[in-house]
Length: 440
Ligand code: ASP
Ligand code: MG
Image 1 (tube, helix red, strand yellow):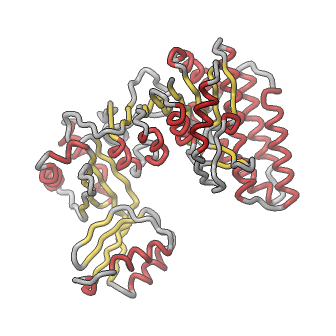
Image 2 (spheres, protein in one colour):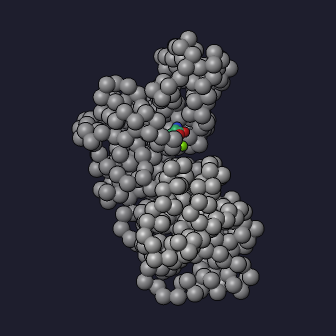
Image 3 (tube, helix red, strand yellow):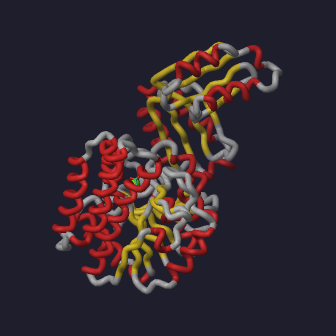
């Protein structure tokens, strides 16, 4: 059995949905279990509808949501009754929010659930139309239960056994809602934005799938950003650790957390392109995997700010770093790259929210400097762990191209080297390194 998860852009319109159904059909021998996202941008529209309704508005947004779905089902030759119940229920919920003049985390999750509830019905219906016996399910109908962390819910342990049992019983192709679940009390929850991947991994782990396929709109994980290097290539296989390092850089890899349930069970996760189904995509596996290239990918991220913190008080003292990070913690500010010497710490942040207050508190314990317009460059590869000379090769290539490197950090796993350059040098650095390690 395989899990086939289709994201929002893969089900963006009638043609895309017809295409998805054909992709499922061509895999029918592998017993697919389909997991779907809402039609593209619908989750955003539903959130907007909730917020507008709380202010007594939202009629146009509701109309937009209705129209988007009706256009799809009309083009696919389906009757409007397919979504009638959901749309009526959505309308009553919007009315209820309007009359109570407020939206809370529970109603916000409830309203978001309609995207997946409707897309799953459309896709199951399309599958039936092309001769694949199929049925749509709201995840809870198959026992997907979560805790009560609305907006960021986690599955309850019981979900795994429930899903396994209920899915095994089916003799049709199920199309299951991603992203949403229910608490034991029966209240609808969401797993957080982009949560359908997480649903797919959970269901795959629960049912012991052979493979989890994440169908998206890119050719898997690439060696670098193809907008910068035309010859960027799709990586055939990456390890979970590599994928995790790359995730931060928006390399369009999955969020590592979302595929953890699959990794724990050693189920490979394949990233595929529904716009280009012939492409082999990238498989993410739990085990460290090396190919001939020590460096497998080069990622970058611009608009980074560097915070340099200097203090002689740090010398030989304990507790200084704890205090320093405590300040970031207080403002819930995520730190990305860190490098430290005995008397100075450099770290990067990718948003400047609360930075004024943070700097002010830091200044009480150290000299502080904020430097904007930086970029992080990261080279990643399992093979780097045991290959000597990668750092030398990397910085020599950059030095020859007159690119100044500012802060260098290597994580404990030794599968990455991360450093900072000026934003204006970022693209050049990526090109130089891609050429160095891939020859193009
Ligand atoms: N529809 C949800 C979102 O847009 C979940 C997902 O697409 O994975 O965040
Ligand atoms: Mg999505």
